[in-house]
Length: 393
Image (cartoon, rainbow, N blue to C red; front, side):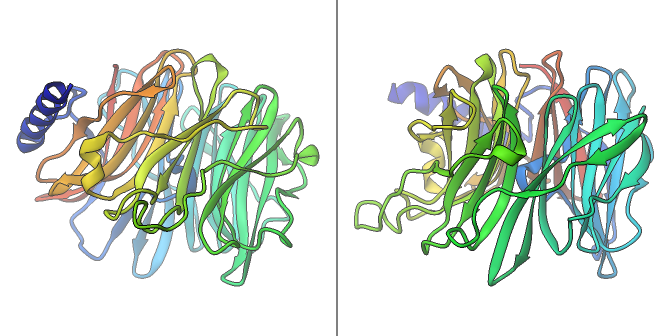
């Protein structure tokens, strides 16, 4: 077994040194800048910055110029060589854009001047903007798919108190309508609710979030058949206390959520247990719509134990494929690593993308036909680029 791991590590090292993408295709540029004062970001909770149908793929991101953040979107049709010209979606200061393909429609959402904006994109063309009335002082935003609708989870508040809310957005005669937002957990017990994720699984709406009221970041979930019937909260991550063996103990951050094969619900997060070298990628599974969660499983393999991991992203085609992509520096420079789910086991890590560009901040999606889509940020001789790759596994 050690020989197998050694061979895998040597192969990954060779691929990293040559800058080869394991998936075998060449990334294309969505947008780029040579201006070092301009920042392109993929930084939304849940990492829902890319979504795909069988006919087209959409990417959303934010650009910071002269202290102002603007949200952009770009679409690419299947078979076409590149994306259309990026379209600015926001007018005021805006950030945390997300996108989801739900019920044959692309839903786009973002935070602008502290409020949530939502729109449909028809044939890659953004439509009217809906501002849900209750959304003010919003800090974070995530998106998932309901039954012919979009589910939106967001956090509001400040450093003294933050609350996660959820709402459902549906089209009605070509226009969007939003339900009243509901808090997902009592603020009296959970004072610092952050980093929401949301999904529909087995007919239940499931919301995940982090809370540090206990003094350490813990990962929680709540679920219900409707937003108005969300159940009691359950803790997902195993609590590991500080010790000589376990180092600083548990700290769970940056959760990402997806339905997987056999309608299994999978959540992935960064966990600081059992390591003095920073956060590692962990996972847990639910088989009953988020009511209960099983044991925690480490996604990254033993070669990733020597360095911290960052920005995990998760996606599934809902049939056979579920993958997790993240960034770490086990070979000294930034590189993207991927692991695939097989049953309840994770594959050995494979180098996905690397080279002189030092890729980071990945976002991923599967289209219903099983094609894998990824976007990430990289820097090189041509400045900063947002790039995209389509492949199959």
